[in-house]
Length: 131
Image (cartoon, rainbow, N blue to C red):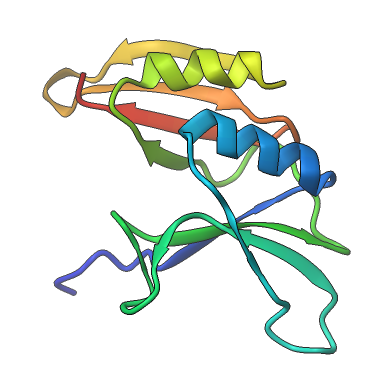
């Protein structure tokens, strides 16, 4: 395989307004509403910025916040890392917007730095930067 096989991720939420506000403030972005892909599945989805023509996220895999019966937020299992200029900045934004810092910014040697935060819904997410 000659490409990154990750094509999409979903972060499950209970309170969409609170989760949208958290992620929009954390990354200084606007999430975009996506209608349910099929009429028989009742769900609310808000996508991270994407390149419409190519169906791709600006950098990396596409992803969305999802509110759907039977899928609940929480920590454990898979950890999604978001790229940023300085992960310490986003970690502090997480705290200022209803989240918490699980692991403060730490060096990962030549690979840069990382931090782990808990979002407003209780999900753990990773933050990565080279600075």
